[in-house]
Image (cartoon, rainbow, N blue to C red; front, side):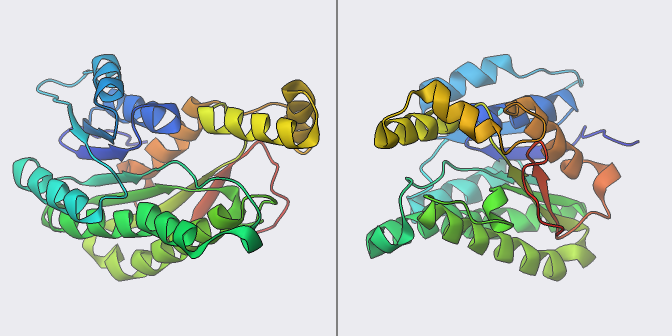
Length: 263
């Protein structure tokens, strides 16, 4: 199975921690040059020092950027393309704050779409020429199982994640002839800071301990445990590989079997 990413350059968003960090490490281990993108300069530098370099001439870099600053993000991505064209784009950004959808303000919806869909769109447009020139492109969106089953208490997130899945499915049809695939990875409950915050929030609102909330959540997971970022990263990295060239327009869950839907 061809998992060789030597000569490929990956831009990994949200790479200073959690799933983004794990994906960056996995792609670097497969030989790709990796540029890490996040807001935290210190966090990026920490992860940069962790990236493996198994391939000769392999080079990694950081890009400190804010996904909400659409115009600045577009300019920075264009500059990155000019310096070092990108063939692999990992769209990954922290989810919107929890809460019921009927209480969300228009400003919250606008911010979520700007952070996720608008950011993904400007990165796509800046980096697409490099993918087309190489005849090889992989776009992987790290979104949520909510695109299959909306999650209670995550109203804004449910909406924007579904929008991202539709964005990806549309692009998958438009770009396939150029050797570019577009897929979604749907993490379930994964051991990240985001999960810890969700558990703490539910515990506070329900008057329970975080341990009780976590145990209640695990009752819905056939695997009986939370996932590890590295397990989500392994799936994302496979989708970036030459071996996955005929996998396109899909949304694949890494959730321990929690989602019960058939598609």
